[in-house]
Length: 238
Image (cartoon, rainbow, N blue to C red; front, side, top):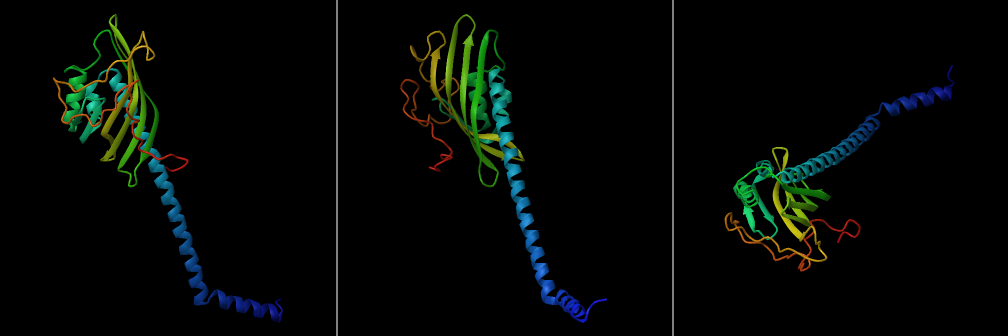
């Protein structure tokens, strides 16, 4: 049996637990706990979405490289948004999907799709850095390209350069919105970059760009600029 003091303590505790003030405090702590959990879930979902976006953008960019390898220019053009712009080397700026088609299928493919017999056009894309912008509807990416271009029995060329791309999510699908490529060098395979350089590509007369080149970057050994980085230094933030 409870002693008189114990019984009194139980009665006091029951009154406290049943008081409106205590119940209100419990409700407030529960609401705060729920809000903290909801915030944590939202942050986790945002991180997961960011990872999924980066993975889709990387797949898009790598697919572009594989299609370029085989000169599948119709597949390449399908990767671009309707309001895109493309500038490859010093060829000038091509606007919209029609412009992209004029560049890839026209200036590069000369109206044909697929590699001609004896042609090589390998397009390795390396060192990708992708950053999704706040809001998750646009993103930027930097890639290094190493290319092997050849016609059997005639010529073989090495090339290397930097892409800085802007991506756009349309109907939950990532596409290229802006593509810019700065070549570092073109050089004959049998001589290499220590002995001979080849000039940069200029605008096509047969398939002219919509706008002139935006800079005069040049190619090795006469490089005039470093392709601008879309991101800040990950350590210093500068």
